Image (cartoon, rainbow over all chains, first blue to last red; front, side, top):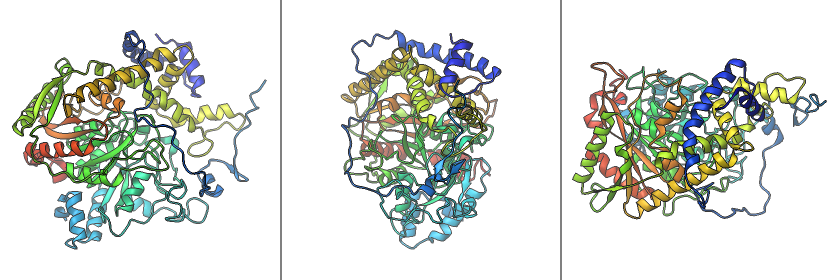
Length: 97
Length: 517
């Protein structure tokens, strides 16, 4: 049901790089799962409200008062490549053509 | 020392408060027990943590204790309070809860070495009540799994039979309590991740109503379903931990708490209470031994004065389908944050950002996490959104309505917790769908957001075991309407007393030195 091309497309969307063996396995496994899941596609649920959340809350706001944020040194402590008070990453432009 | 470890949390806390036992001695006994873990239940214990470099965050200090309690940075782990309902009690914490300065991986290699800058609210409430963090427990990576075999740090062994799984995703927490390595533990339940391992390990597991306990600091899997809860040896301890952890939290705007709080249960009978048995259970796939324990438990309910009523949950059979669209969809979005930028693993990509993202995620995530991200991304992708995600949300509405209809007639809905007893390591790792079916009885409650408790109800021989294979624990699930935890705990307490599981299974119970010896 899910072919190799679809797997590669979804992997690109999900920022995952799959090797050839993983693509094969994934196609088979996802197809199997979706075949089961497909049973709900046939249900007549016209007019049923979708539930995104079970607790019925309106917007929850807090008082507009300043609070103590995390100091930059703490926020950066776990970063793979902190640089000059910021998170350093490779250039997003490198691949542009 | 063995006597100390035989106490429940409520008993130990009372004795410590009364000065009958020393908190230090009690704590040391548990630290020694945890350090002797042979089940791979712990990723970190208190001993490991004490050996860590304290100046871990480069700021020269941890967050100032008590300052700005309601801010993300202020929610640190204060030193355990000297007094409180849990004073002196060590508790094992599933590694999905952030703990300031203590490594937190959520079972994933992508977070190896990560030491969070703040502590989850649920953990902070425990320490504020006097509890100590005994260790961080192993789990399926990002809580995705039903056997704990998806951990990036190796599987957890079931203390009843080390050739079998403890269930998942909170397998380390369940095995720690069942195996006598912790008096109680925290877990999280998205589709059954507390109740199923509690069932497979023969202990009590409670999934509270969505919103009862803050999710702040719980690494998110499926945000509309995730809920934390306790693993304990008995119902009273589950109530005690819930009473401490429940409540509104300004850091989680979906938290609402339980009105009136929670008291320790005392009920001994079930007179006047109505228990609904889903008619659909007759058709359900489950082991004969599990069905026999379920039926025997139903008889016990009647002996205690409870009334058994047939109900119907016509959409529950679609729970697994809806769940395995909704949970992966939310996960695919939540796990986008693991990209090698702010914390955790970074792989390569010196030249290109996208390449760095892809290599980091491909190296850091295990196969099940990749599968769920793929499934979720597919379900949310253009052209499939309405057919899968939209439809699953509507099924969710129908399932919640089924429960509403049932609860108009009955106080509780009862089912087995899991279709089988603990299965052998490796038995289902090649068949994701067979693994997902473990959640058949627990997923509907998660989708409806209602509370449910798993109680050990008896023993059954495994169907995949040979002649003379030791009998294994079978769980019984009781579900109640949203925020009816007190009523649920009272009924569970009464039933627990009548079942006498601990006495009946005495010789085999691992925390009493049975299988563990």
